Length: 577
Image 1 (cartoon, rainbow, N blue to C red):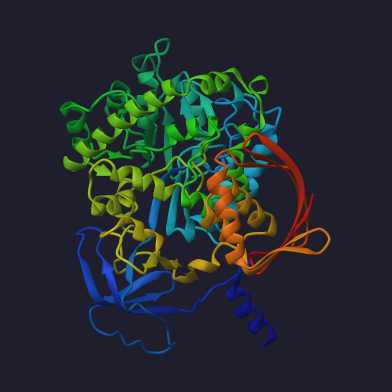
Image 2: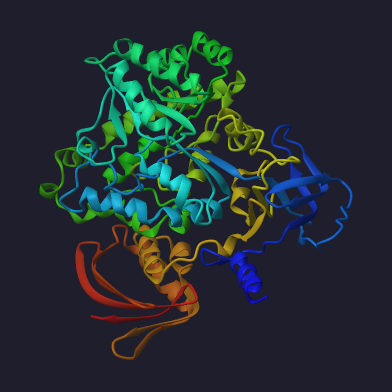
């Protein structure tokens, strides 16, 4: 009997979270969003048994036997969990994650960055779920990807994780060439392609990825026979082929070779009728991936944009790095950064041109009925896991496409593109119970995707507010990020209502949130170049001790800050000046 009770308790305690989990869940009287028609069905009842949806009814459902857990859906909305079709777990989104783009290895070694990427994967899982993303596709990385899917995801609360191994590419960045577990393999012959493919096949990849890089010295036509060969191997083994091809000529060759999914926009020119017909005739899915390129530039200029989602939900340590270049003088940064600091306008003009083309192409392809799927390329510099998703959706909206088309792209279209629509992507009987409950209808306003009250993953009810349990260090760092962003709401969100701030040893400086908000809001408005650099940090239980170097306009000051965190909020700060 004791063993049975212990087993039941372990079923409830999963990765540090208490999950409301029973053999069945009944959602009553909810507004059900049909992502295939755009219609909202009112007063619906959904019965979940195990990890699947067993019944949907417009009338009350009676269940014999075990009493289900009841969710009152009155005035709420139900939609399928969203899908990010383009991420990379081997990259964190930090400034140090792509040394081929900017070499900062003297500041933070790439070996340490690789380990950091592995360490934060379970944390990233919870951030994806918190934002209603219940499935992710890692479209290329080291063989460690398979451990992420087969072990780490299974032993942690996680979204559905679909992966492939190393990218097949005619080009390999030098920074990756000497790694023990290589994320991008240089493949120049059919023999090399076959060898890598067969090695990967043993790990049961969910799809295959080609990084179809082309330039003047290596035109796409030159490497096309190898691309076609990889496509044949892929389809022979009943797998989908995903391809990175960002110019129209290369994208056409990719589709001709047999690409099932294009993971980036065509950005060099407007798509033509021939290309549209090729996508239609071959049932190709198009993932716009709009924000990733510009995010590199933002990080290089130490101006990440400070989107509310990033300040609230990005991994705080990762997001901190995106302003790290503020710490370095022109003499200390790579030439590429020095040149950008002198003339950022040229980069901005390039981004504006590329963005314009991508948005026009997305608008056109959507109107032509091409299957569009939402993907972020999260993990690349500046595109942080999970928190970048709503930003990608906001960028898609700029293409003059409807909210419904974007919701489709984020759910059923994404599932169809990867051949998973029988399992996920819509709310239907027999499908996985991967669901999101919202307080408002996202088809009316995409910002309503921020009103998540519960996420249901494989039949388990997850309270949105309880999903992310940050450490004291993460909470303090999130506070520093908001301070540097001069975002008073994000800043105050990290503090307890009864916050007390002291000057050492016991002089009370501020008492309560209201007084603190007035003081800091005024400072945020008066000091446009406010920046706090953490010179050193010590963590002792719920206390975080920072040595801070702060810039106020043309003046600098140094201070020791001792933060105490209670119940997920900063409850006391003592400054030693």
